[in-house]
Length: 261
Length: 236
Image (cartoon, rainbow over all chains, first blue to last red):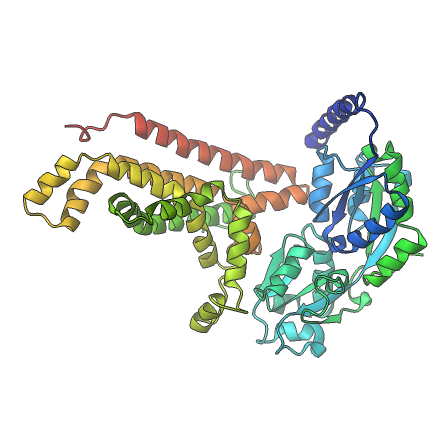
């Protein structure tokens, strides 16, 4: 783990330089840099609108992508204040590496997965079983190696005893939004995507979907954490608190997330 | 494909597979660019059409275009929901996305200027007198091209092929968008490296990065040497 030590050193010096650079500038507005799992891409629009209503002076800068990629980037000093992962594993790993504030870790939403297809001729009522038939040639899931939604999709296929049959048809999205894009453009006949995407204003009404039972996979409990940089940013703390507010929970609910207690 | 059962040189089989695929893709792309790029370069040099600047700009575009733009348009073009993707499906029964053939098409666009521009320069560099002499002696245009023009331009053509090969090795954005990361089919080394970084397998990532770095360096070095060695038959 020589790499980890090295990156810790790099991170410290980056944080130091960042601190220096931030000092002399007049405190214009507070800025919060958010790294968010791709399943939040549309949901965050609604969340941020809600947050900015009461905090108009704060500037929110959002990047969305695969949780694993953000994890690697933060490990190597990426300047994010908040990490909204699609699982709890990556935030916990950051804490274990001393790169995030342990007290800030919380679960903000629980993701749900669906089988989704843009093809009108596919009868999705058979659920995942249809994917093993000849009607489906290409089946998209997120990369299970580093995308939490991909892991859940793999578990659901294994749970249904279909992994072996479907594996040759799989195409892997780099994150869950790219997976959805493969399905939306018809390049894949169907795929497993986040309910939050098919319910979003952008994709609502495109194709049809059936939900995959929550028992078929490990819960997609999504964790939020403040990075070491974010732990020093008060606006980032307030944003994290906002994610637990009634208003934010209503938004998560509207986008098809289950809510933690 | 290299043997895929054990560690070899401390490198896991998945890496050999990805590297093998990367070289296969670069080789096929380079071959296609030789066959298509050479006549294109010849025509661009010769034609007096007023459309030539537009076509040259189009050929050069991939140098400045973000690869994601190429990837995005290809993904749209490959979609079976409409033409031309639907034609391909009608013809072959499958889509081009997530296939090796699809990657070759993407790579040909991606590396086109890296082959065609050196081809053009090499063909232009041959003295018109020599070509004229060939024609005066009664040889057909095709025969002059293959027996005089191409042999005299071979050094520059080799530079174009090497550049196209090396540039295809470095492809990432296009493959990320149309590949689907299928091991042995579309998961090239740059994508595999990206995946390994996200999986926190730093050692494997280092191995991929080192092989890509050394290969690219060796290719460019070979090219630099190639360009410096005096051509014995260039200026007789």
